[in-house]
Length: 159
Image 1: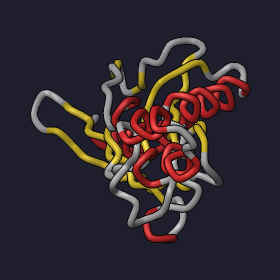
Image 2: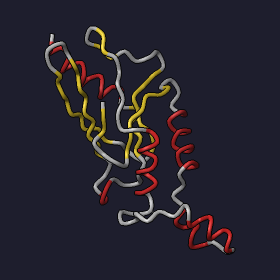
Image 3: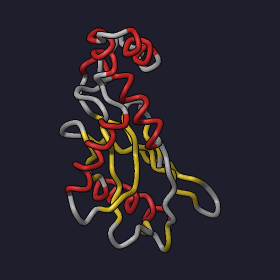
């Protein structure tokens, strides 16, 4: 499974408690704060300025949340594999598939529609299925149902 975007990511994590997704977004923002560029202009001492020079992003063309989103996407990842057994994805009891949207607005202000590609290997061929999912806002969102629906439809065709 992979996502075809550079400012969003995919991951598997606990899905029993929705506060996990909220906490993940908070953690991402502490690891890669969007305020780095703003803090640069607010530095008051030479030491602060020198330290912040190491942290300032140069890629700011698409807005202050874009480069932090690229970093977060790289840290989380754009793809992963899930075993398939007898036509069903083998997720753990508490696991779900998350689409993590790291921007306030998608690229160039076009929203949060993201394309996820599923590759379903069989003995003879691999089948790819593209699923377009929409994140209602920034943060990690459960897309397990959409992925399972798309995967089950494709797997049933292969039987």
